[in-house]
Length: 308
Image (cartoon, rainbow, N blue to C red; front, side, top):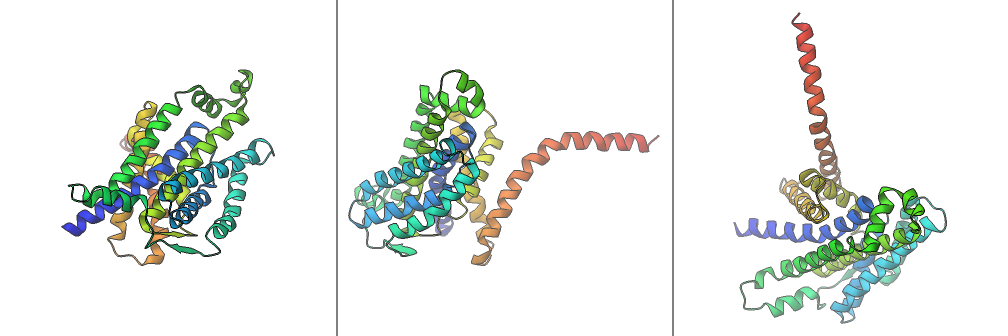
């Protein structure tokens, strides 16, 4: 029983960390209508920068550094789109490809940075909560604080003038231009904020897992988009606070489904395929629910014709 609870807690922690990326895509994809494919590389960038700064003895500064690196990544992606005429998908792919080399350089040419003896925000929280009833949940406490802060910041940001301009840019860029708002500025700001959240997620993952791996961001954008769809399916198109909650819940549910699949003891090399199958099912199920009434009507009409 203890092993099962530990498994659920780990899945919850990983799901909450991924929810930071989901909120980033909520801002860039749902609000700004830009599919940022640099997410995988930016996630690893946050992990690499966070790991190296933490190894140098500054775990709190590592968080700010990772977010700053994410902002820089988002800025470059946005500049390619808005100032250099590069399509948003291609811009994301180009930045993601370039980040592989940059991440390797940041980690000193190593594909893996070990942090077993490194002090992190998680070890500091563990020391702070030592002896309390939350001592065994110190990692979860850190992640919950990070997710809560980011969720509140995102909610407040989307209510500001810039936030409203970003939402308008995603809905109708032509109208934004006619309203004397520069859509290039809103795109740059939106992608910078979104990638800051992604960099934070990578940093927390590296400090939580005690290592940074050059391939740890692979598939992140796929998982995050699937989680976003889960939240949208469950919560629908409600007000922004509930949509953000839906993004967080979607990330947790995806991780729980992934954990349940792992309990079936598939080989390690099947994990990516499992992720892909879960994503397809998540996208397919709402489609079936939407199409079922029309299918049912056609079936009834066919039966009625056959009965004549």
